[in-house]
Image 1: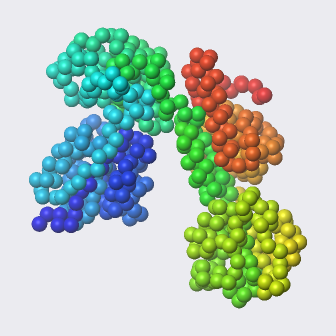
Image 2: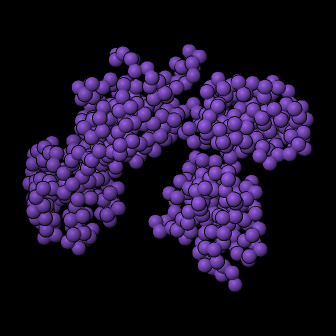
Image 3: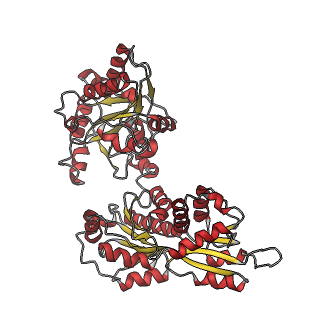
Length: 540
């Protein structure tokens, strides 16, 4: 009775963009006991698996063409795991239905009586042209033929040569010219347009527009060939729909304002996630470097007294001014074996949405979140004055960082409250990032860096060194810009208002303008880091 409980899910991981996994694929990955993934898509699928998932590594030699039979090896791993009752996900690049190795593996499982299912994925031959701005069909309608150059025979080339179908060819960078030659020899005109896309659907994507007769020269002029990476997969689309004039209008992905930009986000980990998502939507590749670490206070007694006071009814209110303050109180609670029930009868205030979210995750619904500005001033705006008739206790517990919050304390005292202002955590400079990140910062490997406060400038320069002259410096406001200039940095972008999202938007506007200027001047659009040799650029 083979695989009584085990089964295999063949899963298409798409052409490279992690966002192209289907909902069903993510669900299957989250339930997998064992993951057998093609090396090319391992990183794309790993993020959606459970912590304890087993990932038996296929020998890395398989990535080389000398591997005896990578598919056979993967099939053996999947089959053995399924036989022992495991839920196996077998992840392949693109779509399993267009993968001849996957078809062979499925037959082997069927023969062995092991149940399997198939989760289709976005095939590279369909997804890459879509990201390159090359529609495969339009109102005129035409046949579309998919050809794998590695397995195409003379008959196949003859058929596509004599037809006027749009041909989507999966090939390698070094074989593109040979592929174009096959099509011309089979009857296609040398002036037939084609596009060639490298690293499709990823932020390293590059698309070249040429004709069958000129593609070799185009790739040489762009210094793409000859290349040590000539064996990389590319997608070529041959036919009128690849014409340059049309692609200029439809190339939505590569024309994103920060396409392929490496952007450094020196922030605390908790704050960086939504900002990084926003940067990705502009086509950037964000790298988060924590510049601030959070540590417990030097003397914990004050905090311990306050937490005991919470339980014994010493406070009417507790005010949280940051996610870290919630974390610090939560950790103290756990230390004492307490949970959210200890907040019963106490009113809870949160300075803003993020802090409120952290409280809700802890099981506490805040009674007060500012309706206006999310700051100490906004909190005071909505804070009720102390009323001896309604408020049995006049005391507020304010757990905060070692950086003072005088505004809030003074405002609460003015409203008639007593305040226990307690250091719940300290913010200290983080340890330096890895050597390669430091090198990239100083050597011009980053295209831009976002500074969200004066302390992020000081801390980043302190732990990693000064960003290179080619790196675009974006600051959240005048005070931060002044600190950057004091550290010898040229400020290129300033946020119109003190918001991290407006700052990212301002950087995107800067990138879009830069791209438009290059296009207007008839120059190739380059990222700031690609101009590294020009170290003599004067500071403005």
